Image (cartoon, rainbow, N blue to C red; front, side):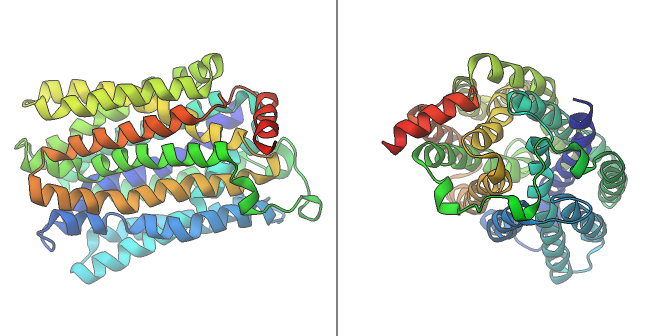
Amino acid sequence: MKKTWLLGFGFFSISITWSLYNAFVPYFLDPYLKSTALIGFMMTLDNYFALFLQPWIGHLSDKTNTRFGRRMPFLMLGMPAAALFVILIPLHTNFITLLIFMMLMNLSMSIYRSPTVALMPDITPDHQRTKANGIINFMGGFGGILAFGAGSVLYGANPAFPFVAAAAITLISLWILTVTIKEKRDVITFMPAEKRPKIKLKGELDRTTVLLLAAIFFWFVSYQGVEALFTLYGKHYMGLTEKDSAFSLTFFSLFFVLFAIPSGWLGNRYGKRKTIISGVVGLFIVFAAVPFADTVLPLRILLALGGVCWALININSYPFVVSIGREASIGTRTGLYYLVSSLAAIASPPLLGLIIDQFGYRSLFIYASAGMLLALLFISLVRHDGKSAAANDQVSAREDM
């Protein structure tokens, strides 16, 4: 598991960058765009890149063959570019320059996100992947804590400081990964490109996969909407300062981190499906209760409980998607995972912004609760529990009959 902890630095840098982006970029947009719906739309730019690029890049990385490996060249290209443009975002001079820097930063992140994620199952045996996903998400969640905790302090000193820190962490993480992860040595079943079986996207979309992807879409509809607009909810609905509103999200991230590794253990012990369902039910209850929290203390308690439930869902979902397919299709399935999560992130913030413009910020968590109910419906229809590759083969055989 040593390599998994080292790979976690890639997730750490991704998480801290996106958390800062989602927490503070709405404040940069607020003076230019007075509509919450428009701000929500602008916060989905990254997902348009993810929608078109990440499935293709994930599939491309399955077929790539260089002396650095399949995935690492994408990290070596994308991470330095992302570090540059994330620094430039708070240095914008007008709306046009802000938009350009946001788009270039999102493009850079799309280049290396799927290959970074695909490295985890590459270097981890199937029976340890849920535990490994817990470890790397522990690292990613720690990045979220720094973003919302230390990041809010740095933002109070100077709005550019947290973005400079994120860029530095990205470059340090890239150095750690290039020094310690050698794909041709560390990948479990490394196969030269010319010997790999051809992967067709249509062939990966069996019934189990489609139902699971639908569930993933709807729980990300809820999560992405809340994440993109929560700081404005705290500011405009609860009357919190920008700093305190962003800091409140620390509680969600902290408890996600604390339960990341235990969630992986629970997924291995009781099955991914059962663990995910318990998290979906729990997060539905949390989201339904948030509108009744009229002070900071109960709000932060509910966010902490939400972090626990999100760990049960998020830690087990990606290994579930990968376990249904073949080893040769890891990159492709990683792209599919990010395709549906990106579709949710594209649709959710602007739709939620329109709802808020019409009905007020209280509707944010009513909307989020409805998304979790739909996710519960689709995950309940999945019959495979993701416990083992052997079980997966049996389910696939039954579906083909």
